[in-house]
Image (cartoon, rainbow, N blue to C red; front, side):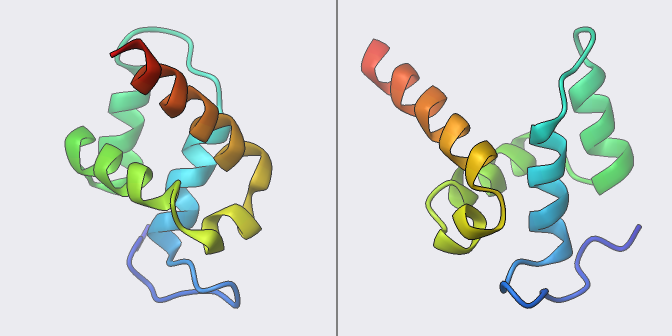
Length: 83
């Protein structure tokens, strides 16, 4: 899968859409998500999470998948509050 193939009508690249799609899934065991990140997207997990964090602040991502983005924003805020 070529994940850097330009954007859709909403302005998100295929990579951005794929990141959001992976975040919609639930993962069975330890390492399953990281393995999928490497195999499906060809990204290191660190880079994936950098992209994901930036997407959470992108209004185009919110418009594309509001349920996932809002859920992840709540998780991020809860983690920040714990610090």
